[in-house]
Amino acid sequence: MLGRTYDSQVCSIARALEVVGERWSLLILRDAVFAGVTRFGDFQHNLGIATNVLQARLDAFVDGGLMVRREVVGQAKLSEYVVTEKGRDLAPTLVALTEWGDRWAAPGEPPILYRHDDCADPVHVRAVCDSHGPVDPTDVHVTLGPGMPAAYVANRRPRRDGAGG
Image (cartoon, rainbow, N blue to C red; front, side, top):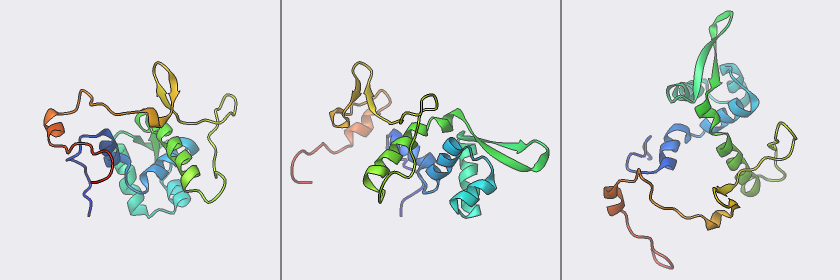
């Protein structure tokens, strides 16, 4: 069974999965970011998620800074969950996952489309080079960043090209 953290990984993808990698997390964020859902009951109704799971995810988002919990004005026992800048910064990730799902997992035509508010043209996520603009993802390679510990690199197995394993 997988643990809840990826402590052995020195990788921003692994750290992001600790925050949003649970099955319902991205769907909750999708509804919050793109549909403006803020109320517990609306999330629960729209997603059909168990209330205890939903509460745990919302609490984790609040603890992680992706949402803030606010009391609804005039309704002391009613809270809303509002996406923060940190949560909104996941919007391109949600668009990218949608595009991947449309291509590889959808049974037919895309069920939703992302459009630019100003002109209604389609919005897409692309790999972009600072110097050359959009690039093919197959033309992207990885290099070590300043946060990579030397001891972690020393313990990794070398890349193996070709057959074998």
